[in-house]
Length: 281
Ligand code: C2E
Ligand code: MG
Ligand code: MG
Ligand code: MG
Image 1 (cartoon, rainbow, N blue to C red):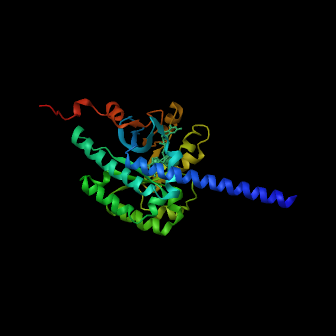
Image 2 (cartoon, helix red, strand yellow):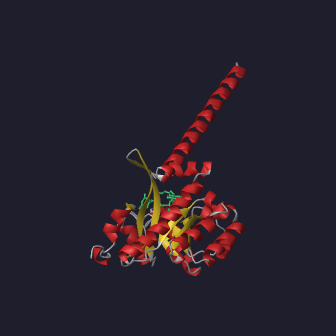
């Protein structure tokens, strides 16, 4: 009967919910453990001057080293956000990035900016700005070497409070980038009020190049008008690079240049050994 079918469906729905809740609880518990056991690592992907291929900065991207495998943030950041454990994970990312900036200054005499990703939950958390300021102070780093990447969508969630927070970060000297630009629904008048320094063209629009360039052109024009630095994300081909060079985009990031790399690998590839401090005499 229909009634029996309905009740079966309910039972099915309930068991699905329970299953989902159980998975979430298990994952939350294992993320806690991962934090305690230091199973997270930061990978670094270079940002390069599009015209000279010189490195101008990098983005820190988290991975979870779980049973000898690297787990992608795409599979655990959403759960970390849902459960709130993104806050201590994010704190670790801030800490680790400041430490790395300091380490590169000490070992290579290099001041390379690092960009970190801040998710919507983190951005809404009261402790974010004090955490960032304290970490910068603790490691004695110039705030302009730490850039905060926030997606367009998280900014638009609560635009008025976003403006206040971004202003605090900007006043303290940190860089601010709008990540995945073009995928949200920014109104242009709000965009003008956001105290940001950089816009990152979402990979989706870069992958359309060179054939379908309307959005990328528009973002580049907008960036120029607003006096922002523009980073093109997800450059994979020579043709995409060429188009961006011709349009006078300044900074690029993507597999064409490099995948995100483990710290040691990144250092080997991008830092001159000649710059390294001599430790043993
Ligand atoms: P995102 O911030 O937009 O980072 C760019 C993503 O694109 C990275 O994926 C990067 O590996 C990938 N990528 C870079 N160049 C290319 C390319 O040429 N082709 C393709 N197909 N992909 C490219 P990843 O590392 O898996 O990170 C995914 C997302 O996870 C990030 O997107 C960011 O939103 C989030 N995430 C990563 N690390 C953190 C973190 O420490 N904290 C928070 N809250 N979120 C993070
Ligand atoms: Mg990013
Ligand atoms: Mg992005
Ligand atoms: Mg993204």
